[in-house]
Amino acid sequence: MQTRSRKPKGGFEENDHCDIIYVDIDQIPEDLKEVTRENFLSAIIHPLTIEEFREKYYRQKALLIKCGEVSRYSEIIQEQLHDLDLYDLCENTASEQVHIWYPDRKGSNRKEQKETDSFGTNDISLALTSLEKGGASLYFGAPVEFREKYVKKLACQLGMDYTAYFPDFTSMSECEIFIAREGGYTDYHSDFQENFSIQLQGSKLWRICKSGMTSPLVGFTPHYANSGNLEHQLKMINMEIPLEFDKSEIDSYQDTIRIDAGDILYHPAGIWHSVECIEDSFTINISLKNLNKADIIAHSLKHLLNQDPELRENMTFSSREDFNTQIQSGIEKAFEYLKDLTPEVIAPQNQFIPRYLQYDFRNQEQLDLICKKLTTPVTKKNKLYFNPLSMMVRRTSIPQEEMDEGVDFKIHHNYAGNPDYESSMTVEIIADEDSYDFLENLADLRIREPDYQFNMEEINWRKDKKLVQVIKILVYQGFLVVDEV
Ligand SMILES: [Fe+2]
Image (tube, rainbow, N blue to C red; front, side):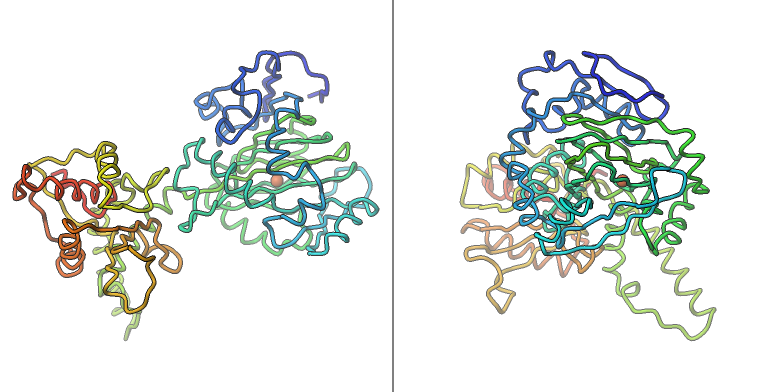
């Protein structure tokens, strides 16, 4: 297909590998003209709605949205990107180093696979001199604030919610700034993240080709010199498809598209792409990453398995038969434990964003608000049980001052499957006179009798209004689960 630089007003071009939408900027609704944190996804994919984007493109097909209006990003440029001042951006990078990419000197034919030589530095002057005088490109993380505020928001707007965060609330996604000189070239490779490229200066030609990979767990990156990782990448990709990397075949099928300043390109994980810089350029690459369903279920199952003394035991065996017997019995137990997992057990209501980080039982207004938000009905007829993925820790049980002053308990949720047993959700509780003893007993009961069942009928609903509220909040938190049977 032909590459284009002129923008027809409005219009759509369907291609094999990357569709193109030409935006008529006069038709952009007022609330989407300036790209902000609140409208981030809706503004950059306009004129598509989020639903249309998810249905037709997300995880499926690349899409270039040609808008050509950099001024839409002025808030981001001024408040987050230091007015594109390179020294300030390098100084405030979220990455440990600024990476300097050297241009390939093999000439302009694209037939041979070109490899990118790069090295990292903390010497900003060296990086900027390499860019200005050595024709190198620079690649480094965007400022932390942009990643933590804007990229997180984008992930949420796409429906990733809590699955896009590490347990400490930092973003799993990455956001890199790529400053390339005219002639810079990155050869064909695929990535494992969902990618948005926002072009803020200059122009690039992207060559894009579908690969047949869907939701790959790793990229395939032969463009890095001495990657040393291709065997590992191939074994992972071969879980899904046979992969014969043939650059000339990819090159014969690809769509070439041109991205100019003010345009945005979405490309899904697993597509082949190469990028040629035809003018000095400034690009923000947002690479979204979050937990997949296998992660969510497997982490939770591991939590359950780790509560079983037999499965928690380190493996020792006296013979092959002994090994087989122990593992077979473990597999059978795992099947049984799996039945204890439900969506509510894994991700109670408070797991989702925005999340309460503290419950203050002295604050009646907060209690009323949470109870109003609770979508799981709790009635007199219900029976409740302890969430097997949750634990309540009492301040008085800890011999050192670790909890913040005033905090009486902490509920930890879904931790035994995470690296270093980090809790995927933690909430502090400040108790009041009416609730302290109840919570204390509950924390003890959870440890001593994890299978205990609560009968809501045994509570005097009229007299113990506060107790009912505390229970509802513990259901919202997921420490207690309503038995659906
Ligand atoms: Fe890439």
